[in-house]
Length: 162
Image (tube, rainbow, N blue to C red):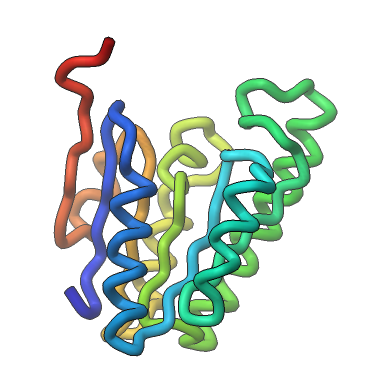
């Protein structure tokens, strides 16, 4: 999987968990993984638990709110948008400096779906990455324009839910 671009998309749960599993596998082989998380709020319990995986797996979130983007007020959305821009800038720095072997952009597809960034920004991440860097995008909907840039697409959908 080294150097590939992968997407975990769909309406089902488990996209982030699948990406985290790949991070754990990479770390067990001496690789460095970085997860940049978007649109999920600042779930402190989950973030604290994931800190136990450092330094091999590092998680970064620049959001300050404790709730998802859709639940924010307009003022909170504006603040969150600025934090998202900081996350995008940080992602560019990680790619430029080749800081990791595996980069997970958790819920980055949601940024495009909500109109917070253009799909071209995701494509530029792919174009700039080192040939050996594996990159994973998660989110519900894969933009058609991104599809040609992706090596593997995994759809996670719910077949039955009680």
